[in-house]
Image (cartoon, rainbow, N blue to C red; front, side):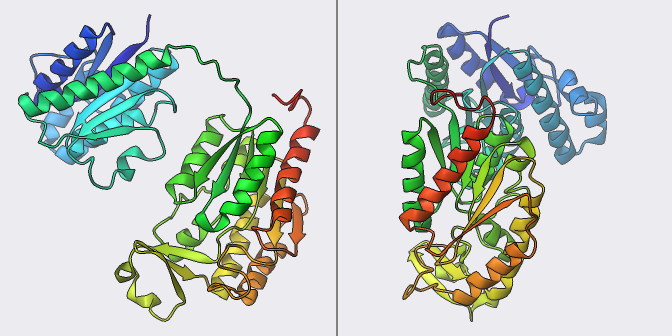
Length: 413
């Protein structure tokens, strides 16, 4: 069976709109598969009917109608749609996924898309696409298009938007059918912040010269989680987790929190990793007025008009050191921790706003007293952005990769 564009949506409320998009896709010469996530009857049952979706979500359509609880019904159909799309992916039937709606339709469609591997086109036309999209997108490459008007019928404006969406999705699918001529190289994941950019850039350049592609993730919570997910999905062959600042936001309550599993994927998957303590001198908030009042006596630095940085304390650094050690101790992969004693960011250096000798010593203590002997601990006198630190980080990873049997042969896996 050939791959198809999968449409996920509630046909009891959006039948006309989904049939319109389906027609546009078919006109482009592509096959479709329509999954009906609606609770009530519709003229079009869909290729996968709502009863099948409900059962996959742990219920039945009869129960959902009897219960008459919209929130419960959305949760069931969300789980069902995600389960079915995941199965279709495993059966190699999915060329792309399309969804549309308000909060409920977006929730269902996005959940289905998050079960689809990175690289498979995913597009949602949504009334909430102009707001905070992280709850829907998560760490996947989901494209969200703002619907401008509510998705309620086909009118002159909505028709243009839906046509653009259908054409964009078809274009992505057709583009994926073109053979790539680029040489595939083993991929290394790296984490970066503005205040660790010199270190990451130098490390990246060294690794690229040695035949690797380096994917750099912005350590803003979603960035770190995206990296962890790609590691779990098997895309990554090595990690230079230079910027572990998301752990500080998670501990103190900043805006760049990552999941509780941050810093664990590489170790669990057996992927070689070199880790450092980049930007653990700071916690991130928005504009000054958004900083919680309980922090009013702390040390701050205005990074830009929308980002306020707060210095981590001695006590917080001790906890962060213990956390890093605890997470790395679980590693089943070759793991190196590089500690730059001279500073952990561009702001944590002599005569800079966040210079903190006591804080660094506390971070060092938390790590040193808890890190187990199977984790290699490399101490550097320089700050994290000194060229020698980048060289050590790159050399340590290259050494580990080169000593693994069959890992590198002539610069490729």
